[in-house]
Image 1 (cartoon, rainbow, N blue to C red):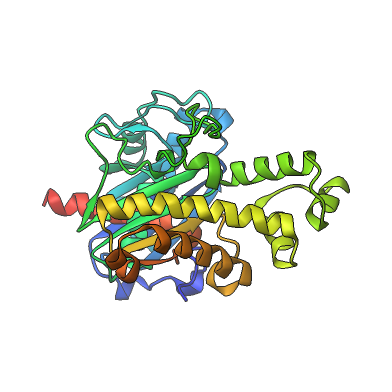
Image 2: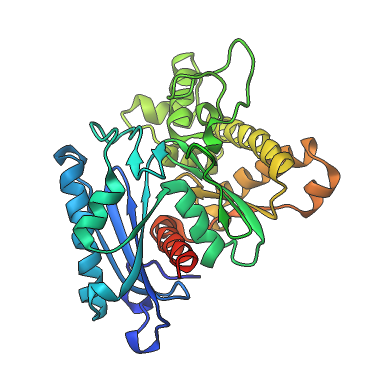
Length: 348
């Protein structure tokens, strides 16, 4: 198993590194993660710090630029030796302009020219990407998709992010809205749940951590019983982790909630498979319930696969691999560095 980027024991000595060097910065609502890698994606240095989004985007952009210099010092190189920097940001974005269009939980960041501000702060060219696309590219480059010709990745967290990689191409779309898989339409009924974006029937309204907790509250308020309901009544914080724990202990409500989310993920994945025909579909993000190492994670993935097999073409059902991502919270920063490498290669 790959060590986390923060584990210094897994860092590559500079003497063994392959040039050029690339930095990747992953902007999150809570933390900024930055990584320095060599040409093969091996970690040379890692840095993380709180986003402090309330201080505003100018402050964060300046600190992201300084983080690149911190990485260089940690690795024992000059910042000028970093060939290119990649930056993954929540969106939607205007990628050609380097701007955040709508920053979601980063309040008052809408319209901010993030790419150019970070480039000015670090003194290096910056490639700009949606954070979920960057995570998908990380898995494609050195993670679970490193042997695949194409992949789709769904990141399950507060929302549902998506990334699509075909060949060596990150699918961004004509208007920087490509790969927004969480906003696929999966339910056209009059009773469709509403996504946080305001539209009804989107996948995010059924398969995100936010929707899972919301559905649990609704079911408990309607009278559902069991260990999960009793824990919440006793004051436990209702989270996906709590739901997963009670599902693992056999609670009926918790199990039903997870299986319903898995079913809707399967519906969305069928559409992606029929449109793209990827070699691999990966599930990542914070809401994977322990992944393959956990009985709950395995049951969650099995339900996704069962739904897919029942609704897709036989060849796709047989040949498309559906599994968990492997880079964890490092995927975004590694993928941003990988995209920087890709862009740098195009300009050489």
